[in-house]
Each structure stands twice: as structure tokens, then as C-alpha cells.
Amino acid sequence: MSETGVSTVFDYEKDGAEIYRQSFATIRAEADLAGLPADVSQVAVRMIHACGMVDLVRDLAFTPTVVARAREALRAGAPILCDVSMVASGVTRKRLPADNDVVCTLSDPAVPALAAELGTTRSAAAMELWRDRLEGSVVAVGNAPTSLFRLLEMVEAGAPHPAAVIGVPVGFIGAAESKDALAAHPSGLEHLVVRGRRGGSAIAAAAINAIASEAE
Ligand SMILES: C/C1=C2N=C(/C=C3N=C(/C(C)=C4\N[C@@](C)([C@@H]5N=C1[C@](C)(CCC(=O)O)[C@H]5CC(=O)O)[C@@](C)(CC(=O)O)[C@@H]4CCC(=O)O)[C@@](C)(CC(=O)O)[C@@H]\3CCC(=O)O)C(C)(C)[C@@H]/2CCC(=O)O
Image 1 (cartoon, rainbow, N blue to C red):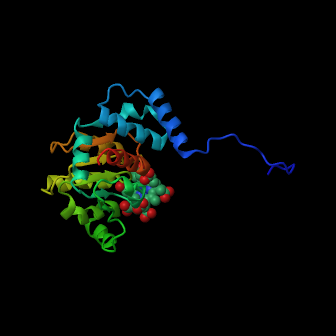
Image 2: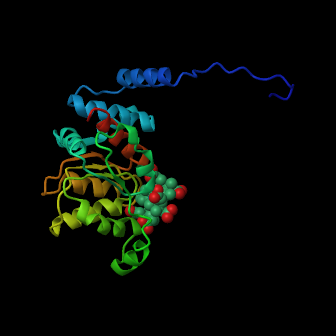
Image 3: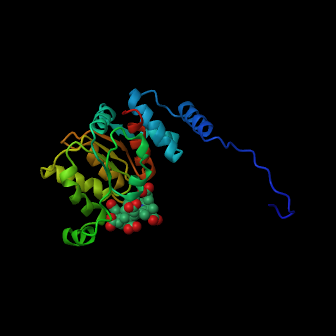
């Protein structure tokens, strides 16, 4: 209601399916997706959709088979291991092809003491509780650079390899470096990253949702 007591009439789209249709059409018109493999392009569209930045494409780095490997893993029932609950919450369960577990161990009661013992963040310490589920999993890191660094340290120390890593932590301290480290890692982990400071939980969840949507 305005000050004059007259309600304002806004003209805006109210059909959810139409909003999505227009949104994806806008992304496909404005983003330079031409250099991407078709399956990575489909995932990139949803990542852009989650953040509104069509130039995100220029910062993508990936192994050519990352989406195929992640889809195979999900079809085979692999768990999705998330660094923070915001990522886990964003995964649309009904898209998952095998009722896959979506795991975030950050709020496990053991984590604060483990973090103190290891002298690291809770996000990184929480990864220790993934160890027995890492083999063939799909990892989604959307927030914490220390989680991604810790994953690489664990792999170097002999931990099982995940099938694919979506590495999109955001921020100013360690985010760019952790993603560069994943992309260059000698273990050759299948990965999809957004280089630089950009990233975030919503982008990580959107990438998983895009991967899952074609996996059934
Ligand atoms: C340094 C940290 C960063 N957090 C960022 C951005 C956001 N974090 C949010 C929230 C709610 C959470 N962040 C924690 C993961 C918390 N964040 C950190 C840590 C201190 C260290 C992580 C790291 O550097 O690798 C981390 C705590 C820890 O000991 O691990 C969180 C657990 C804190 C908490 O509430 O206890 C929590 C995650 C909760 C969950 O979902 O499970 C924000 C919403 C910020 C806010 O609350 O204002 C936001 C979300 C961003 C996103 O898209 O996910 C950064 C910027 C990523 C930053 C790391 C890099 C930097 O440059 O500082």
C-alpha cells in the first residue's frame, strides 16, 4: 500500500516454470558457453542461474569427464559429501537418481574437539568423518577453502579418491588458492571449479542439482 492508500500494481512474472524458462534462455543468450562440452555447459547454466553472473564461464576449470563420472557415481548410489549444511540443504532430493545420501558432518558433536586437536577449522576437521565414505563419492565444497585443502591433504596421505569434486569455495582467504591446488593436483581428481574468489554454497548445490537432473 502506498502513502496515498492506493495499492501499487506490479507487473511481474508469477509462473515458476516460465521464470525458469526465461532465465535459462537469458543465460544461454548472454553466456559464452561455446567452448564447453555439452554436459559441462548444462551444469554451467545452472551455476550461473544460482549467482546471476554470466561471465562465470571464463573462470571455470574442469576435467573433461567430470560430469560423466559424477553422474555415473550418483546412478551407482554414491553419497554426496558437502562441506557445509547450506550446500546439503540446497540439493534437491527428488532429483537424485538413487535416493543418494547427502552428508554434512560439520555439526557432528565430535567436530569442535577434533578441530582444536588438529589446530584447524571445524570445516576442515569435519572432513575426517568422511573418510570411510570418500571412495567413489561426489564431493561438493561451496564454502570453506580449508575443507578443499584438507581433502587434498587426505588424498595425499592415502585416503580413498572421490569420483568427482565440485570445488567452488568462495572468499578472499584461501578460496582461489584451494581451487588452483585442486585443479593442479597430481592425483588427477575429476573436478569442476570456479577459479578465483567467486563461488558459494548456492553455486555448489546448483552444480549438484544439474548433474543429478540428467543422471536418472
Ligand atoms: C572463514 C569462513 C568463511 N565463511 C565464508 C562465508 C560464509 N559463511 C557463512 C556461514 C554461515 C558459515 N561459515 C562457516 C563454514 C565458517 N566460515 C568460515 C570458517 C570460519 C572457516 C572456513 C574456512 O576458512 O575454510 C567456518 C567455521 C569453521 O570453523 O569451519 C560456518 C560453519 C560458521 C558457523 O556458522 O558456525 C557456517 C556454515 C554453516 C553451514 O551451512 O553448515 C555465511 C552465510 C556467512 C555469514 O554467516 O555471514 C557465508 C556463506 C557463503 C556461502 O555461499 O557458503 C567465507 C567467505 C567463505 C569464508 C572463507 C574465506 C574467506 O575469505 O574468509
